[in-house]
Amino acid sequence: MTKKEIFENYDQFIFPTYTRMPVILVKGKGSVVTDIDGKKYLDFFPGWGVSNVGHCHPKVMAAVRDQIGKMIHVPNNFFHPNQARLAREIVNQTFPGKVFFCNSGAEANEAAIKFARIYGEGRRFEIITTLNSFHGRTLGALAATGQTKYQNGFQPLPGGFKTVPFNDIDALKFAITDKTVAIMLELIQGEGGINIASKEYVQEVRRICDEKNILLILDEVQTGIGRTGAMFAYKHFSVEPDVLTMAKGLGGGMPIGAMLAKKSIAHILKPGMHGTTFGGSPIVTKAAIGVFEAIAKEKMLKNARDMGEYLVRKLTELSHEFSFILEVRGLGLMIGVELSIEGKPVFDECLSQGLIINCTQGKVLRIMPALNITKKQADKALLILRNALQKVALS
Ligand SMILES: Cc1ncc(COP(=O)(O)O)c(C=O)c1O
Image (cartoon, rainbow, N blue to C red; front, side):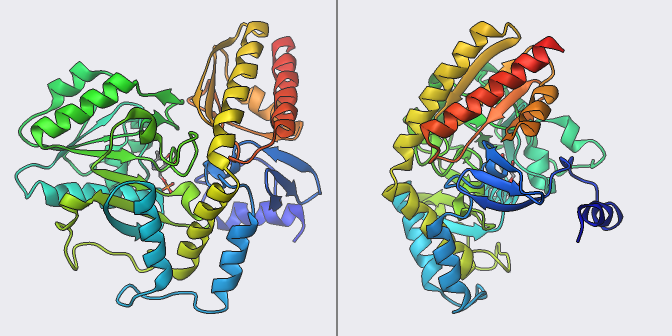
């Protein structure tokens, strides 16, 4: 197909639900992607946090290649070794508990929401979430999401959700009633603009949950799998959730999500209560095992911490040069650069100069490269970003 034909086919046959850049990507290796014309881009936002180990990581490719010739799908009324191994690995990386496998972040959150409903035994059902959160597009996850722009047009949404300002412990306490069964949080709001929860806030939320027998559900769909320099972001906060959701980076590009509930409560989800046909298929679970192996073998968590600190330091230097940079914030390689101007022109300029980043909430540049980026790649990205900022400043 020619470029023109591809665009025309999208136009004719695919719902325009996404805002797409006019770039057709055909290849990816590590932090470099190539478009149909052979132009290369440094990808500092690989798949919205999916390709944490870089595009086409050899461990992921080997896992998929090995599995595809053996068995592609095993229905969940049978057993498969890969699912068992991955569940054990997730528990090893987190806390004793049980895993439910699904195919996306929204589904992982749906599983958590249903888990909370069961936990509440019909008497308690309210889940408190935060303003500017993002939990996914299915109706339950959407009702949990604290941003009306995603909800408009889809009402009535499932009931039982309350939204309070982020990082505001008094508002949270005020919202709790005898119907509250869970508090659902992102520790760093990704889509909401890289807003980082304070340690005191998270620890106080944990304390309240313990005191009132409320579940703490942490949505680590974006912050998980090494993104913040720890395997899961909650490790920075010295708390453990009761329920943890993950997806994005878990499969190294393969579609997989998971919900983990701690051991003491895991028994409440019983046969027939929840399910999904494709959940935890042999290929995606094998790919995810490859992801964990790659992160450990290549010491990617340390690299994410080191490169994260480096990027934040260098971006902060840029903020002295460009007065429209209001703040640089981040943890590991989950970084936001808040501007006082619209970020889209900066994003566009970066793209045309061969750097992929993201812009969220209109004015926050979101930078989330693979965990294994090199200093050379970081420097190249910084140079392109600086050029882009300069160009926008002069326009
Ligand atoms: C924190 C968070 N939760 C849930 C989701 C939804 O994940 P998915 O798009 O895989 O359904 C996202 C996606 O951006 C996310 O960032």
